[in-house]
Length: 280
Length: 274
Image (cartoon, rainbow over all chains, first blue to last red; front, side):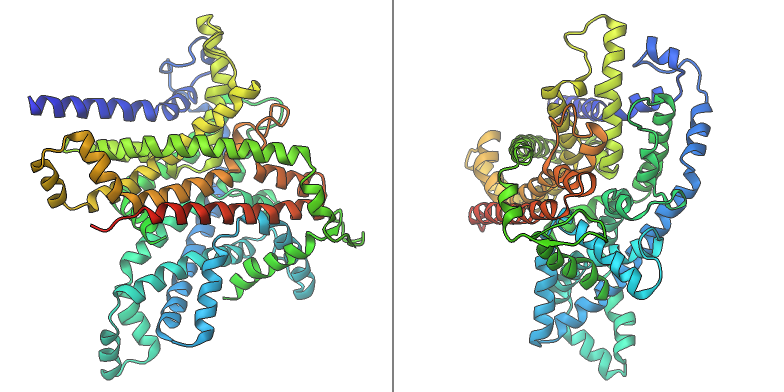
């Protein structure tokens, strides 16, 4: 009896999950259909699988280029955020000065500021910086990465600071110093490896954020060669006519890498998201 | 730390400065100091106030639905059944796909797709283009936001549920607590920290929602689904009222900060030790 109940519950859960994901199925099924077929058969499986719309969509949004841009921006930003925040948080947590307390609390408080409050002055500031320094910042990948580091600093420092204060024993560092470690070695050989759980959490949260971010790149990246994946998808959804078959192929193209990433790192992602929330 | 100063701290103070001037964004035109006039204008701007009310309603409804669903999912997938891991994985999936893409997916389903189904089935009372109906377009926003966030919150509730020690639940069972009693008197009070976090995340995400708004409805039909974020964006980058738009942005900051502050204080007061 109990077993039957639990099997029933399992079956129901799987049904619910499949219904939950049905929107993705609808996009997938329709990305293979011609316009006429879509019209008579909007929900069923396609009759034949033609990849015509996929190749069209890939060409139109310059998928490989956009994928590369997104990948570079995400990887470089996240790597720099992790290393810089780990260093900064460690130093701040280990010093008792008033200055480091002040910096720490500024970082935490600014996490509350919505991006919409900063976007216009940020763009103006970048304009005047460009004039002052004489090189381009807006519409460059480096400039965007620079801004992501700034926006990611608050949460990164917050999480590492909590880890150092909470679960990194000071005695361990003292022992390493007695063994002849200098600060640089101490960080890379002792502190950084021990931070691994926090690093994984932060990487997962920041990757999800930066890969999917839309507003900041839409404000800074104007030229076609710098399009990220979300910005590239936008070109399929014009004001008046939408070529739905191609648009859906494009949506699938953007969803597939995310699914692959998820399947590869599912355990870490679920753990990271849960841990990130508890710390945040 | 330089990127942080340049991208967050400096713009924040600059932004407060901009909110006191009247300016159209052109480098050539002068910025005229107008004092608090922009702020007065914000509170007499009907379109802004409408979008504020709309965003608040949207947030209240979505937060309630998302958290109820997420908690139900979490309770279900922590029961000892075989499919629990597969279920979790599938229910969490939508969160990983960005808001912009999700909005486009549903843009097809609730818009064009719905009208196709209506055609194929000759039933237009049940199936019609939601996105061209003012009221249903707002429902569409709620559906999509729910679909995006419920799985994410579920993961946080699961972490909270798994942290509750088995001893407490066993003790309750011995005392004769049934399933419901167990949930209301034991699990929910012990889950308060997770509830605080989830309410905070859903509240601030709903209030700041922008991507889904852009891709799902574009604010339409006839501005009926324009949320605050989009209103600010349009004021600055479409209508070129930089001063007024920035004043709205500053008001927006104080609103988000105040609301989340009170929510966190209220719910964390209810947390219990065990």
